[in-house]
Length: 235
Image 1 (cartoon, rainbow, N blue to C red):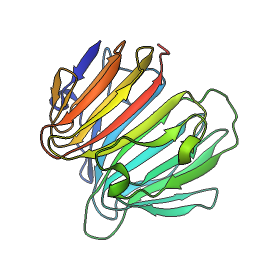
Image 2: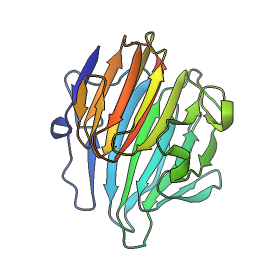
Image 3: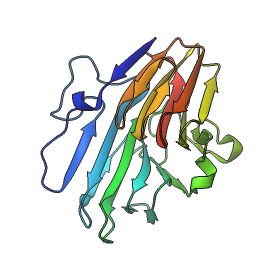
Image 4: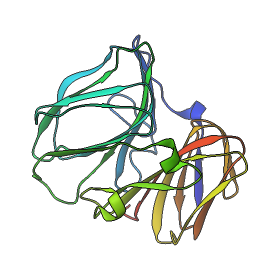
């Protein structure tokens, strides 16, 4: 089963310093039928002006994953971490029993674009911790680069949930495939370009909710950039 979410149907708040597409209900922005998908509680697609962003604020009992698409993501937190992420880099924060952090667009004259996801961990009161992973374009070129998993296998960042994150930049006419997903859920975002995913054509910023499919075949109709969350079927 595949449900298509059009970019034009995503809620976008009117803020002077950034734009954001909300894939699920968030704060005052409510969808009647889309509050989360499996363990994926939030997916926000932010574009933030240089030097602007989310000043220091708290989180708890959530796992935060950020994927940098453009510009610089400058992160600071109460655990003493201070990092700058660029295109293709991935950041993971386990808020656990409680953290504070800030996310600011680097002051280099280019807007920051990031996709941020929140996943509910399988335990409460976890000790807060942080990881980030620097990835080159070659790492994700015409292949599904596995960057997040439940056990840290093959160089992935381990999280506390049955979920995986893949990213890929695909040349026009090339294909990537994810098999053995008949008992899994997948959430696919076309970040840039156009793709065909099984029978569905997606343009930039469209998304798919996928369940009870044997496999997912993604073909780039022109040069494309995708993000895919694959997880246990918890609904």
